[in-house]
Amino acid sequence: SQKIEQNSEALNIQEGKTATLTCNYTNYSPAYLQWYRQDPGRGPVFLLLIRENEKEKRKERLKVTFDTTLKQSLFHITASQPADSATYLCALPRGGSQGNLIFGKGTKLSVKP
Amino acid sequence: KAGVTQTPRYLIKTRGQQVTLSCSPISGHRSVSWYQQTPGQGLQFLFEYFSETQRNKGNFPGRFSGRQFSNSRSEMNVSTLELGDSALYLCASSPGWLNTEAFFGQGTRLTVV
Image 1 (cartoon, helix red, strand yellow):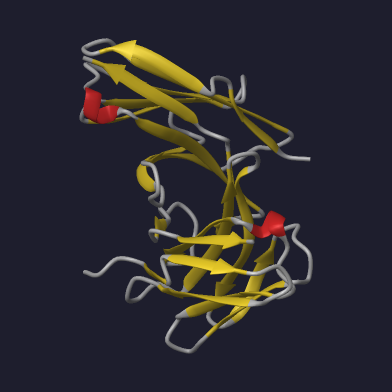
Image 2 (cartoon, helix red, strand yellow):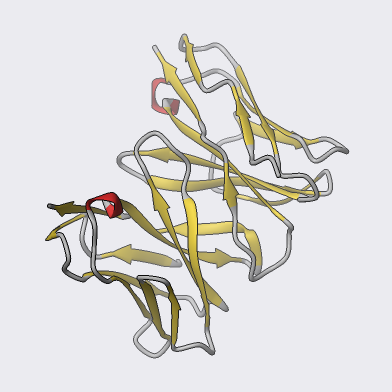
């Protein structure tokens, strides 16, 4: 069955450093992959979408890569700030429908001042 | 424009009771999906409705059901509540086609005692 794994449950880094989060998937060839941010007690908020034919996507301090051979996506936050502390989730569409997403369990990022 | 609205925000129910949760999607969005989020299992897909029809269904027992109205508003019902149904229930709306982001509501925190 399709599986999606985010390798680290938690990641602690110092302010100003680059945070790198990993998302791996198996038994699947998705057309695209998405990253979301979730703060405690709130719903996830969309950050970036990267398509299978795109190697890299950037948005301000965020960068996502997508390697369909390795079946892996990397999510980078450069010049990290305490306000970036949150749980980050990767998600893939299942069954050809955007409304049916498989989510990883998330990586909780803590940025210390 | 207004975001996704879920009501109520918090709910406490007794085992064996039933509960109905409501979701109002973003205006113009035809797809509404429901997810259950627990600390152990993460975000799990329940079902998706598109133009009043159930388009996809996750691996949950028949006690979980939903519907969508002609104005795209959706309700989710859980009958014969069990302690394990305690979770954050999230609703997401999207236009309904691929390569689009999902917009999540704040969620309904259901506690079954």
